[in-house]
Image (cartoon, rainbow, N blue to C red):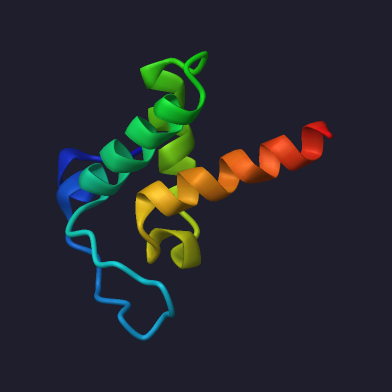
Length: 83
C-alpha cells in the first residue's frame, strides 16, 4: 500500500534512457497517465484509469517514459489485439 509520502517521493533521474522524461513524483505521473487513458478510452472511469496508471508505473522502463506516451502505446496495443 502506498503512503502519501510514497506518492510524492521524487524518482531518481533516468535521463540515460532513450525517450525518458523526468516526472517529479508518482502522483504527477499517475495523474497525467490516467488523464490520457480516459481521453483515449472514455468508457474507463477515473478510478480504473488511476489504478491502471499506478500498475504501469511499477515498471521502471515505463515510469521513465512520458506518461502520455505510455497510455498511447497501451491504447495502440489494445487496438492491435482487437483486430
